[in-house]
Image 1 (cartoon, helix red, strand yellow):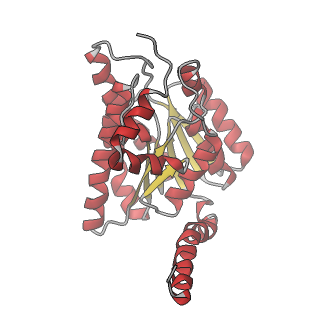
Image 2 (image 1 turned 135 degrees about the horizontal axis):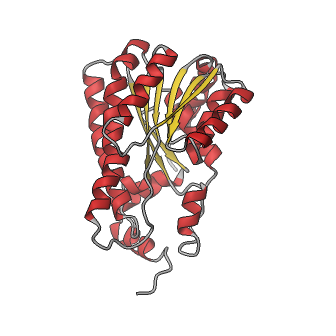
Amino acid sequence: LGIDPLTLLLWATVLTTMLQMPVCQWQNTVESLKGARVLVTGASTGIGEQMAYHYARFGAQIVITARREKVLEQVAEKCMSLGAQKALYISADMGTDSDPAKAVDFALEKLGGLDYLVLNHIGPSPFTMWKGDVEHVKWLMKVNFFSYVQMAWKAMDSLEQSKGSLVVVSSLLGKMTSPFVAPYTSTKFALNGFFGALYHELAMKKSNVSLSICTLGLIDTDSAMEKVRGVTDLPAYPATDAALKIIITGATRQQELFYPWFTQIANLIKDWFPFVTNYAIQNSYKYNP
């Protein structure tokens, strides 16, 4: 190839080091999660529930929130059995003006502060072509976006004091569009825009708070599988793996996560070869007009 062997060795060393850095950082951070004060939203099911269990295994102090109190109680009980130092819950409706702040206040009071705020909740939205329901779009934006902004601001002082981490769970559909999910994808684009800008602002202010945005593909949660059944054959990936990757991303203070790995490739291809992306998207679904 005409490349100096020493140059090849140098680049191989650099790449190997880069690939190993998150692993080394994670190995050094496992112990730091013991006793960490964590608030996880959308934790009654799916990825949020699995994150709660992983944090519990690491010995964290956890507050979980969602709408269904009875289910939250069961998740909290399991967290205690898995090794959580504390596992508390608060029922909250993120579509209201007051509940997002109330959930953060509860966590701050019960835990004495926060080391991690993991924003993961979403509101239900039909998997269908948009039929002009503007009120649903407004409501979903409130749940999936405005409540995130509200909770992040409410927790910011505590995270600053603890040198904590703000973790935002987003989607590949916040970076590239797809049919049947117009209201949902609009909320995820809003998340990426706002928190992408906030990342730069925190860095410019030399803030102690790290901000991680997690871009996920199709995950095998019950709600997601129910929506796409019979509509697409796209592969779905395990919620428990996604949950652990999110926790690692926050604990190692990485700026961004793409899970599964090919979501990052898809994100790049959409800009390089938009016609390929458009063809793939429009032919990934079973639709008869």
